[in-house]
Length: 214
Image (cartoon, rainbow, N blue to C red; front, side):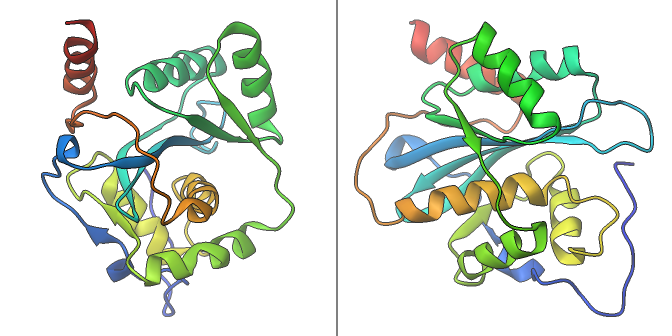
């Protein structure tokens, strides 16, 4: 199991019902205005270490949709491979957000040297709790939607409900980072070509390959 979460009498600052659901969304019929990935990184695979998490978000018709999520414990070489794999699984990505601090700095430096992936260095000037408080209005207003069929969705919901008291918050860091970045683009009108996103990463990669190579 991914992780156990502390059971408290008082819930956290994010309510489960704020995470709106979407199902079977046909991206071909919609206009995407922003398309990004957001990372929280950890380099050690030991049991006591944190997980790495990558979330992919699309801004669609003034709503922010979580379209894919990956969580794992990997060493740095495997993390680099996963970083590249997930970026190229989603043609059209504009930015990959990584906190320019601690473990994220090593990944940023390696990827900027070895790839042309458009990395956005995120400078953090507030604590984690303040950053989550800053994006709760988007959640409360129903601006953020998730597909409950996505992988690791139970972990995201558990962490959101228990934050800041959860044992792990690896899903919350990239979420707050992405929402803080995307909220300034709400109501814009520029469009990005996109195709439907399957829920399975292997199907996803095959779908994009067929679409862009034929």
